Length: 227
Image 1: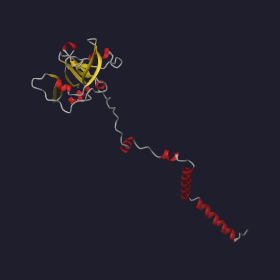
Image 2 (image 1 turned 30 degrees about the vertical axis):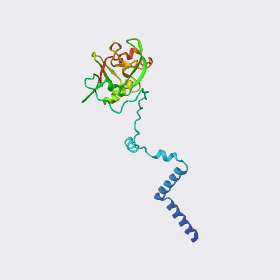
Image 3 (image 1 turned 180 degrees about the horizontal axis):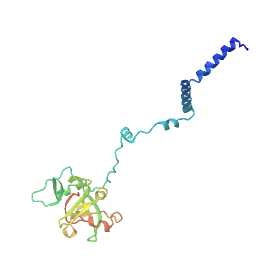
Image 4 (image 1 turned 45 degrees about the vertical axis):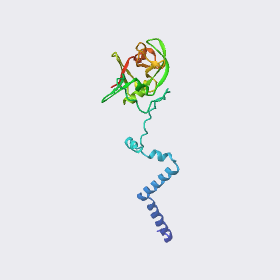
């Protein structure tokens, strides 16, 4: 019978116990976790972290990042002949009312003197019904809408003969369409479509006659917001 040296037997027991300890399932799991972490940090690079982070739900994103205010383009600046006065002059007794700015719960009646106190523009254009060119002065519709309390809304322009047309806000806000009260430095007579008439700048490309001839309202008497 073969005899083993005591030293060798003790060494064999040590080796076996170390192997069993290494094969312990708990230690194996810990070792695997450490190995994967090492690979993730040094082998996969920063992209591994970005891919492993789940995206926030849309509702959470909206709550985390405040929305920027919507940008609305400011209206085009106009070149005025003269600015308006700080306050309208009071109407004189018996003075004729030429224009009414009317909105729900409010009605503002304006005489010629009061219209002359408002911001005034001047430009030369052809009156299409008369086929004549005039240098007009008047108040931009944009300023009248602001005075009436309905700035930025489509406008209904009424004539004293019952005609009515809607002028779109997108047209009068950025283009100096005006209510003319003066032509050739004089009040506009009835035979020239006065005393108040809507006129447009001379721009056949922007305002082709077949589409915009209805905007030329003569005998204009009332302006109100379109519903």
